[in-house]
Amino acid sequence: MPTVRESQSQDSFDHHAEIVRLLPAFRAFARTFYRDPSDADDLVQEALMKGLKNIHQFQPGTSIKSWLFTIMRNTFYTRVKIAAREAPGDADCVSSKPAADPTQEWSARGREIAEAIQRLPPQQREVMMLIGVLGSSYEETAEICGCAVGTVKSRLNRARLRLLEELGEKSATSSIEHDTAHPVSSLEAGGHSR
Picture (tube, rainbow, N blue to C red):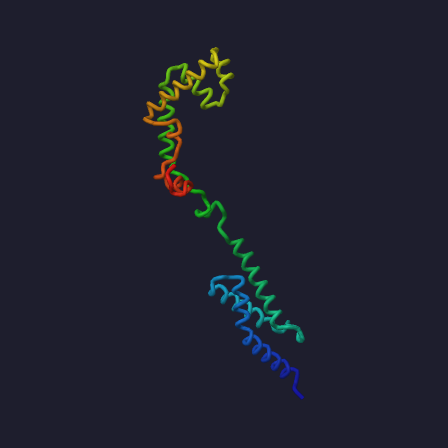
């Protein structure tokens, strides 16, 4: 009659033989979690190490395949949680920061526009600031300036034309349109010029 120790040794040997037989199934199951074969193999290895270390907790009469698959699934979820904790924060990760055009060009362009507005005649500058900058309506601007709405529209039109001429622009939108030479705007426009 075999001793308890011999019986446990025989069960352990049976479990090891069963594990070796199931290796292809473990690898296939791991590939459902990871596309990269190396990552899948690492998961199989880690799960089997945990399983062999804790083989004494396996309940005889149950499926060792199911037991090890559960260990593998739990190992995967633990890895995911750890990776999420260790992932760089949004503030630290350069790849998550939105790309932006260089601010120097916009700063220089903004100064040029501000200087051109300052060179406008006082009445045109006042209408341009009220409507263009502060967002006042034609009626509000007419009331503030003490003139008719038609006069406000005329002053605004003359101010816009004069600004375009001073800035060397062809249309009212060209000073704010992005050129395809800008890296970010070319990505947004799909690489096509507008």
